[in-house]
Each structure stands twice: as C-alpha cells, then as structure tokens.
Image (cartoon, rainbow, N blue to C red; front, side, top):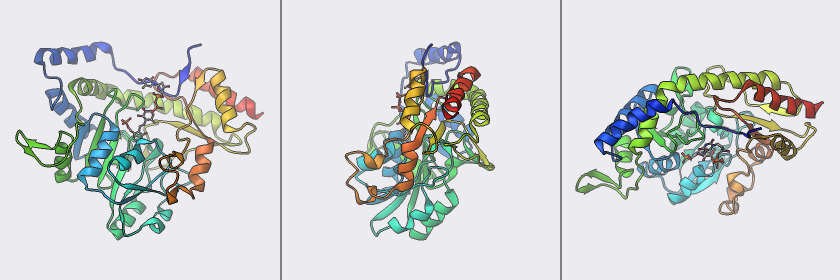
Length: 367
Ligand code: T4K
C-alpha cells in the first residue's frame, strides 16, 4: 500500500499550467513583477475579498516583511502553539516573543490571558488562526486598541476562511498567508501579506524588493521576498480549481466527524456556525481516557501506512532557543493540546475508504 501522508498538494490539470508557461517562455520575463505576478495578485485579492494584497515568495518572509513594515520592536505577545515560523519571524526581526497560553477548544491565543503579559515594552500581538479556525478577533482587537498595540495575524492556514461575510484576513493591522505545497491553495512555495492600509501595502511592497521605491530610491533595508512568475502562473491556474478542491475537503472532514464524534478520549475542533472553513487540517486530540497514548496511536497508524503529523508538537516555547524565556514556563493548555494532537490525513484526493480505515483503527483500539 502506498503511504497516506498528512497532506498532498492539489494540482491542476498539467496542460493548463503548460499553457501559462508558454507565455512566460515567450516573454522571457521570470520574476520582478511580471504580468503573471500582477494578474495573480489582483485575482487573489478579489477571490479572497481583501483590499490590499502583496504576494511574497513564502509565508515566513511575508511575516518578516509585515513586522518590519509596521516597525514592530520590543516584546510581542504570541502563541507557542504554532509552526516555528511564527516565532522565528519575531526573532529575525529582533523582537522578543512573549508566549501566551491558548484556548482549550480552538488552540488559538486566549485573549483572557493576554493583558497580564503586557509591559511597557510590548508593541504588538501576533496570534495564529491555527488550523484555519479564526481567533477571537473582536476580543483581541479590543485589547490591542485599549493598549495601543499592533495586531498582526499569522493566517498561514486560513486561505479562504470567512467569518460571516468577511474574509478572516481583514482583521487586525495585517495578516499573512502561506501558499506552501502543504496548504489548501498552493504555488509550491508562496505567501501573501494582506492589509486594509494602502500605505502599509506600499511599504511592504518596497521592503520585499530590497527597499526599492523606484530605480534609484531605496526607502528601507529591504529583503528579497518577491514571488516569481512560475509560482504566480501556478497560482492563476490553481484559482480556477480551488473551490472544487475545498468542496472535496469538506466531504472528507464531514466523514471524519461522522465517524469520530463521541469517540471516548478523542477530541475534535468545534464547528463554529458563522465560520466558513477551508478544512485545511483534521486534528484530533487524544486524552488520558483513550486506551493508547497519543504516540502509541500515532505509531499504530503509521505502522498501517497512515502518516499523520503531530502539528504542533513540541511547542515553540520548548525549543532550545526559546525555552529559557520567562513566558515559556506556564502554558498548561498549550502543553496539554500539544501532547495530545495528531493531524490526520486530509487532502482533496484522499479516498473515503482510507478515511473509513483510519477511523476504524481509532475505534477498534477503543473497543
Ligand atoms: N505560520 C504558520 C502557522 C505555518 O504553519 C507556516 C508553515 C508558516 C507560518 C510559514 O509558511 P511558509 O514559509 O512555509 O510558506 C509544513 C510546511 O513546510 C509549512 O509550510 C507549514 N507551515 C507546516 C505546518 O507544514 P513540514 O516540515 O511538516 O512539511 P513536510 O515537508 O514534512 O510535508 C508534510 C507532508 O506533506 C509530507 O509528508 C507529504 C506532503 N507533501 C509535502 C511537500 C513539501 C507533499 O505531498 N508534497 C510536497 O511537495 O512543514
């Protein structure tokens, strides 16, 4: 049996991509704001329902550029329950991460624990919409407004997620997306920075291009964060197919939920009524009432060819470069979730028979 991995990229019909490549070959224009880049940037903003979007070569660079564009310094309150990129971006921007615990139901930053961490050095809050589940955006905005802090969302997982009629990317001062191969919508590597502030978009646009404002004017110590034409061409083609891909994910997630809800010792994320999900991940949280430990279940699935992943274990606050920070010490909810999580395989091409088999393994162990 071919191993079933946690995800596989959705890829469009090859001929459609080849057609876009033909244009690139003819033009001989490979990067630096080519026609595919500009067309994709506009099309993506329109698809997502956001005002100002700037494409980048990946999500981590989008975050670094965004933090720099907002001139974030000092301490930033953030979540330990994420991919390393979230905190590493702070580190690369010379900011000090201050870890805050998460909510037990969503694994997102817990607003009720943020205010006690604010000091005179705090300049911003950096939450993550983990697994694409929106944070408590209203509560976090209230805290940011009260204390004069910037609010930057790591929305790497949240492509296409909506709260009511609004894209989740419209909240905060800025949000970043990842378009990596493992994401719901991919350009192989890729990212985007989203904001409602045209000045901020302009500054970020300069910073991702070495700081160039024009041929001879450098307005900041920029980096090279541009998306190239091949990535953008793939993005243009992907956009035609992404709705179908998300619909397939929805079916798989629904089947998982039908089979797993109520299973003793296995927790699922909540379904939130006003949220349009993208079904990016299928995390389960194994607790002590399940007959196997998380790692025993993880290994048992692997031995049968099902390669889930423990996103996000260990916590970022447990990494050697962060574990001595005072804020790394008291994160009981994040620690519990991290010790219990397995993200089960979910991607558009995953067969219902595989989902049934995975759920059968989970249930039979529980009998
Ligand atoms: N913020 C957050 C909250 C994030 O989760 C991420 C990235 C970022 C920021 C940074 O965004 P980027 O700079 O990456 O755009 C993966 C991804 O590399 C990473 O993008 C992602 N989060 C993270 C959650 O997952 P790994 O190390 O687990 O990936 P890897 O290579 O082990 O792939 C997992 C599985 O996916 C493989 O077993 C098979 C499948 N796969 C993977 C690739 C790369 C494919 O089928 N094809 C592929 O091309 O980190």
